[in-house]
Image (cartoon, rainbow over all chains, first blue to last red):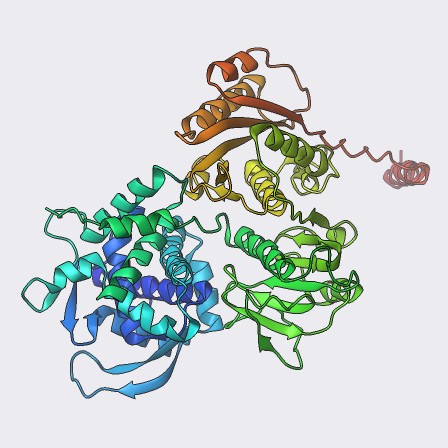
Length: 230
Length: 366
């Protein structure tokens, strides 16, 4: 993908996406989240874009494709391909898909030692550090919520999947017609997820001193509760 | 327009039962997990039974233990997974991530002496690790960046307390005083020795950058080891801005009350490089920030000044300023390391210099 030719805007955007995906895979590994399937990775990406503004970050994408497997980002799929071929991410349980456009392969993704080193280098910039810190907080929050809800280890995978599809922005997007799942309405610069996080922050901070990651964790705990009821 | 989400009363009730997680850097969180790991293990034993004083559990921080243990020249004969709530592991070598979800045991039986031996052979300055000596109720903590050659002779040791005394602003003030005495009062104290470095010309010692972050990390560990049931908490969002370094001690007003009370601690280090006026302003900023971060549940706000100036001139306006802000001002002196003695040229070197000058003169001729 890279060469010594001038970097075009579209290349720059691709690189941004590759960085985000590598950071998310590293964050999941660092927080001790279990195996990262394609579906889980895309669902976590969706939640990260839906909540990015809570950390003052701009989401990289405003919409995802609606598929029977959940939200889907073509750019993330391409990024995964780059990362696997560059030996930054290892794929196991590989399954090819016949689809000519979208789901070319499925599998379980795991960071490699090279990937960890590259991630550390990319975190040296201020923006890199901020994005990684946010994604790590999402993943730590997911683990914290699993523990707070007392989910047994053998049920964690299932519980996490069910929690992610309860995300407020995802639920809101599913209820709209069309093939695309919208994250932000035009010009709103907010999402149901960000509004939910702000509300939880306001409720918790009346009684407790908390960090933003505790808000993310509390939000995911509420989604766990909703998943149980659903 | 985004519709404001609603949460049911049951969901809101659920939120009230949640508690904040560990805070601070990943390494700080790892150290807090070691303390919790020990406390859980201890809770499973009968009263007063602390186990074998010779045994050690060496816990090494790794960002992603499944990917890289960070040990270049050590290959274990076997490894196994351990769990944070096993309550059984009190010796061996384990590599753990920041929230202890991933814990890989590399070695089973380990004595304290063997732990030091392993540290010297396989670990380096960049490793963060803890030698937990459960039988002695102590932990020796090495943070990344500390020179291991010095640490191995005088490790940073923390006593883990299991008492549940009621914390009050006065008792906290006493703990802050003890912390200063033990960790920061002299240049060789456990914490202070990592905060000073020789300047570029090797003529004077200066504070390393962001000294407040060092103090915060040490105090966080110290208080977490001291208080079993109170949350000691770092405001992570604040610590990233201009050296503002807050720490809170949060606990229930009484056991089971579900009503929280907190104490704010603002840390400021007065620098030997700054002018009197800049340090005074820095101290006043600390008072203002301590006041600003107090909320309705705050019982006291402390502004702790760690005075590392060479000339510790009094700041007579400060106590009144703090009092007017309802902030408890605590002033602790940090002794500055003496400048290294200038090396006098030895007699031999002087004689050689004179002789060389004579030779040069002779060679030039009249």
